[in-house]
Image (cartoon, rainbow, N blue to C red; front, side, top):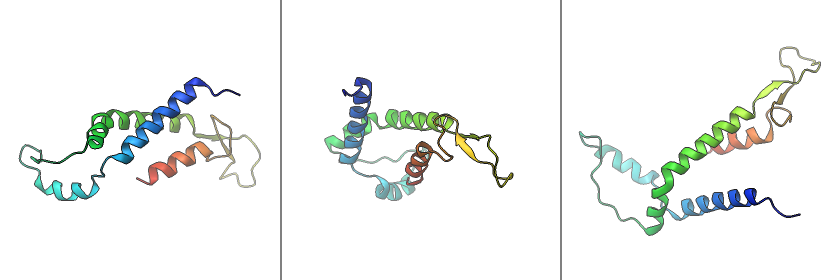
Length: 120
């Protein structure tokens, strides 16, 4: 069976974003040292040595992070619990299912999002 071209294109795009991100330098350590240097105008005047990979990553990072946040929010909105409507042994905690995929709550999609965002 041939792969859906939309799925293939999306997978390629996501893998390219991941590859670009992995090639760039992490900024967590630099952030600790740069934060105290914020001046009255709210900026840190620095000169930095950035690799080509860093520049490629930084060029699109803002838009890509916004797109991923929008995606996650849409998926969380889509995959939310609803009452399964069955008889439960504990009326205070009725059985719930995902309204989108009908898996028992929390569904695999919600769990993956929760785990991924929780790692940050």
